[in-house]
Image (tube, rainbow, N blue to C red; front, side, top):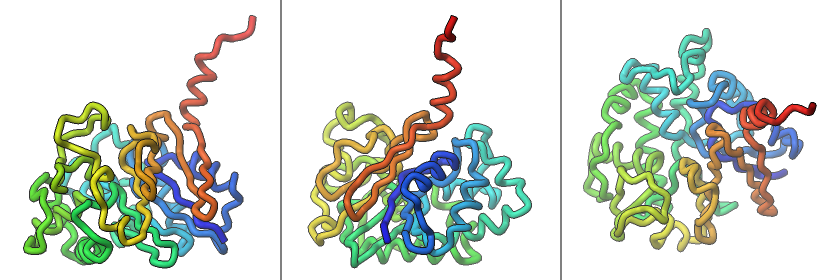
Amino acid sequence: MSTYLIGDIHGCLDELKALLTRVEFNPLQDTLWLTGDLVARGPASLDVLRFVMGLGDAVRMVLGNHDLHLLAIYAGITPNKPKDKLTALLEAEDADLLINWLRRQPVLQVDDELKLVMGHAGITPQWDVETAKMCAREVEAILSSDSYPLFLDAMYGDMPNNWSDELTGLARLRFSTNALTRMRYCFPNGQLDMICKDAPEDAPRPLKPWFALPSPVLEQGYSIIFGHWASLEGKGTPAGVYGLDTGCCWGGEMTMLRWEDKTYFTQPAIRRKEKEKEQAPKAS
């Protein structure tokens, strides 16, 4: 029995299957953790959802910002854009089934035995494990309810960007959603900055990556797993924090971590390899 953790998939089914084949993943014995953003930008979002849903209880995933965006498109709240490559999914005969399955997935995973916490973007330094659980359950409750379009319509926006126990209603849900699915940088007091997307070495002062601030979650003895931030290439995080998005859909790699022995497995983007073959000089 092994625990495998994989970064953002973004519709890259072939690379996902290649990694699972390499480690002889057995859904009857092993567990697969996915950092979210199953869909968008890659070539096979429809097939990724079908495949992951088919793995059943072997999967522990969280929703990412692109997954939530898909839900908003399907609900008619925001337009479908060609760059996301979601048309086949949106027009599929089983789209209703897949969308309703997706919106009932969690936005946070916590395993008290493995001492693992996973959020798509990470865990804000303003939260401990208990607060993260509480806020995640609130988002999950509205997403799985009949009122989910109301939430999806209100989730877009960068404010509020500072946690308070006194936040209520849609403002509280928006903060929690941003913290779990969109966060990259924070001010020294933990307040979210939702604008900067630069590499850490180029970020303006006083912004710091969220994981560079003291973390109550780490202090409680947990490790943090996240995706979302492909430009990090999985580097630069402190002990106990694991960034697994390495930009497969952009021509990078898909990264898998076997938790028990901390062994990494990588699968280069197949489209990149095909392009390299096309550009390779032909033998004369």
